[in-house]
Image 1: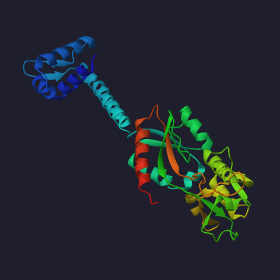
Image 2: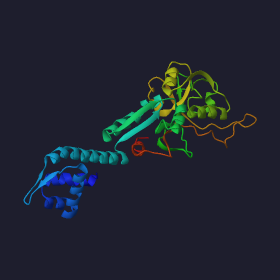
Image 3: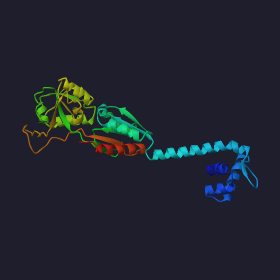
Image 4: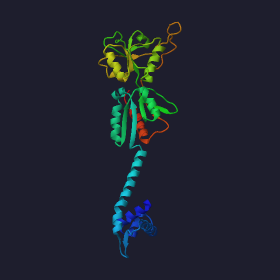
Length: 312
């Protein structure tokens, strides 16, 4: 039984005229009559009672009609579903992100995306930044939001927004009146520091301090930036944090920009020729390059476009 035969049958059942049905199907009458006869032979029943003046559905035809219509309806549903999936209008996006990203602009985009693409399910997976990349490589995530701009044979990244690193200081701290600090200014401070195994971003901050000539004296380790800010507000130390996160607690902590730090030479003197490593908390979206589902590609494209319109 061919779908063509079923379609011919339903049109003829609607028109009850071989002439009108053939015209509607854009075929001549002989092929239409042949396909109907073939269908009747396969079913072992006459579907139409024909006279020289009329064509009417037989009892077998009346019984077969709702089944034929259901088959064609399911076929149209399948066609529509495939089209929506292929165009990115339907599907699922598995997105990994750290808890701190829930405090930034990302939730607003997700809300807007769900309104624009209601048939695309966005599943959020909150996890440590250090776990994002492995989950992405393993295929457990489609995308992740990260401060690690990784690009290799398997993973690509696109910038979402800039986020410079600033110094968060406890209320009333002796350095709070300064507009700009260097890493060297912090060598004698207690630090609230992100755990080095929590993210590549934390490791970059620690390496920058070493480059500036000192190992930070860590009073407390935390996993997330909001926790670091709360401890800074409580007076437990200073912290190096992305500016966007620091602004969320500007009522409770002092914020100073971070300027370049000359690197000490072998004798401990400072040299102006070298500058400190560029440390920042810029936010990226990462995805696997070997397979990107249409819904994931659509989500990524719209996210990058939306982020490009955010105020600096």
